[in-house]
Image (cartoon, rainbow, N blue to C red; front, side):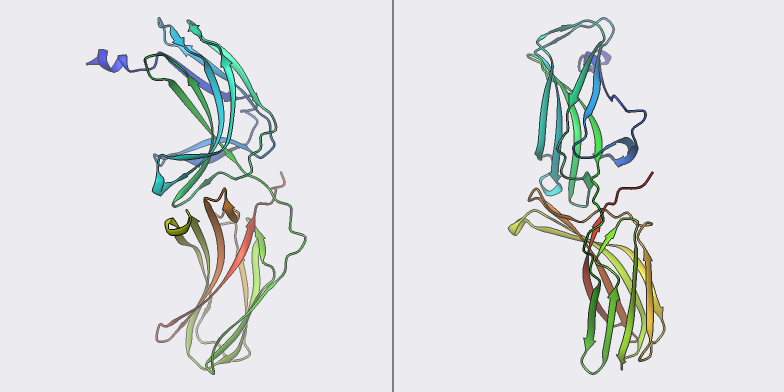
Amino acid sequence: MNYLVGAFKPPCNIFISFADGRSRKQVPLKKENGKTVMVALFQSQENIVGEVVIEPIHGKKVEHNGIKIELLGQIELYFDRGNFYDFTSLVRELDVPGELYERKTYPFEFSTVEMPYESYNGVNVRLRYILKVTISRNYVSNIVEYQDFVVRNYTPPPSINNSIKMEVGIEDCLHIEFEYSKSKYHLKDVIVGKIYFLLVRIKLKNMELEIRRRESTGSGPNTYVETETLAKFELMDGAPVRGESIPIRLFLSPYELTPTYRNINNKFSVKYYLNLVLVDEEDRRYFKQQEITVYRLLESS
């Protein structure tokens, strides 16, 4: 039985490393098996440089029809699991057909790589970047090795960032105004605002502010929408009176937010909403939702 197991083992080991792997920032990445690993972080237009080491297992030779490395940006929709849509695909040939008897090192370089979308692990969709080394062989399956990396892209602060002012009303019962100081927030920002009670004729017992993420995947009849409540923040406990004003101050840094993604490669979108929830003494709930834009600001070192 051990002979059978050994027969299916690849005759070599493949190692993929980045030239600046020791100095480059590492970030956590959740794998399909649920485990989290630390991988290199890049941004669009960077050079991706490194080397591939192929090491035949002692006493074995590796006959091949060529060796290549690919840089792939892929989107996988979970209702179509296993099918990857490549939006970035670059190839470098490492070796011509031949035989390997001993450890061999192949340098590679992808210059100023266009990586327009960020890595994303969502409820129904995954966007990933990988390096893929393939040793092509006759009659037997190819030998393949993968190396994940993460891409994050940064946005300068918006030149225009208008405040949000809205009114919520139930005729002759309730009239409130709420105001947020801006409509676009970076990932470590603070939501600052105020709520004014202009008319209160129903007995409210509490009020919350929620941050919601809405992920939509697919298109047409195959559109899937998943809404998560990421944060709940109690603004008020007890009944307000007319003329009362309640301040809002909500820090975003404790929550695992991503930037807003709009129609990524016609496959998915991720949007964020502030949802104001009012609950009266009979447990009736009143909602008012407002979309906000979230962006990634370059962190100062």
